[in-house]
Length: 323
Image (cartoon, rainbow, N blue to C red; front, side, top):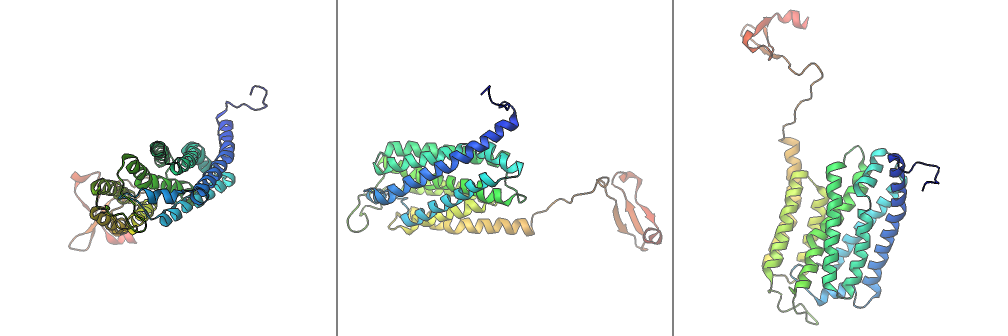
């Protein structure tokens, strides 16, 4: 390193090297993630979907719906990889290097390892990997939310950085980690071939608690932040759960309920913000204490400066004020 003609200890040089590193590692990790998941879902027997059918739970989703969800995550990450190469704004580069960093690289590698553990039915390893994946995505999303908030001034940052990472997080939080945990704990049904499991009414309350708890937290996020990405992803997961039937009554009812509540909450918060929220009026410098105007009974204008309330209002000739 000492022989290099540049000072690698300079912050700007280090940020540049970090960006170059991410331009290589992020597409590579995504390629490995996609290739591993496709092989485990299509080539290997039993596949990811077949394992899910062998171990049905009260929160098991419809495989095709989740497959489309994961494809959307991959599409968002492809856009992110393009943004890493084409980014020109300093704020965007800081968001990539300081906000996301290596978190997404680690997440892609962990998801690839999870697919392998899943098809080998190593459910304890699968649960541990899902926990690591959840913590990694939670960390990166919190850093983005606190230090690199989305802004309308940089819409591509919102579309290609914030949205894919939040989409990824909600999948792990609302479905994949609880599903792997349920199977590892033995909260499964006895599959029958052909047809649905006969004991599907067993273990209703763990599934009810997971669906209710994760969606209540998601509903709070949607209301407080008007988060359209969380709304779409949480609704998508709810649909994937109740579409695959039969389901225990409590799980089925709650999943349908939040399928309706999430969009309604988002629409309601936008309506409230648009028509009912009170926004402060920005004053120009020197106008922090504007005068209060009114009229007396004889039609003369009254000027009452707030800075001198004890002096009483004084009358001003209207013709002198308006010419």
